Picture 1 (tube, helix red, strand yellow):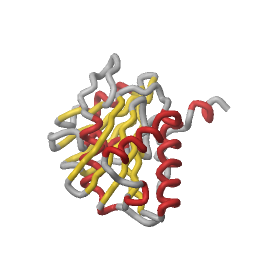
Picture 2 (cartoon, helix red, strand yellow; picture 1 turned 180 degrees about the vertical axis):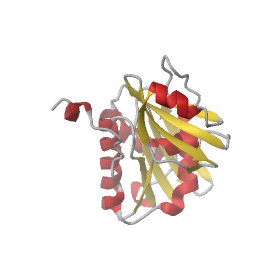
Picture 3 (cartoon, one colour; picture 1 turned 60 degrees about the horizontal axis):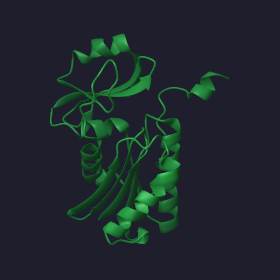
Picture 4 (cartoon, one colour; picture 1 turned 135 degrees about the vertical axis):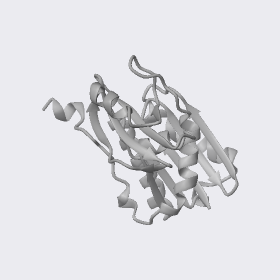
Length: 202
């Protein structure tokens, strides 16, 4: 099975292709949220490297959030367009999945910086979510974190230090969830755990 995945959920960009036992990937740690400008070119470059055509892909995948509202929409739109044009399956992954699959620890708390001392969090045990995704302030996160073996966060800030390989996590999440791919392309829905700033300012 051949899969092409895109993660545009944060300031980074990850594109990966899994072709049976071969994996090709490109990770840009900070593309300044210019996903709409560079993502398509990175996909084309990776397809060329893998010697594949877009129509060779069986499953198109993307990270549906939580994270950057604009980035998430770009990733979902790209993958839906590919899947509809090629008549192929889709796979949705969460930003929490990417963090969880970057670790070898058994019980992890995945954290995503939501700015202003707030975080999106989700607990994992043996790579399976054991809580629903939540939006909490820093003090609540520190309290909850005591129940976990390890904290996983994608970006360094004043409260936590980045300790994840997002490229590794994304590839592992793709490989281990391909059986969840579906022909229901409308199942790709953004995972928003809070309103966008524009919505809050209305």
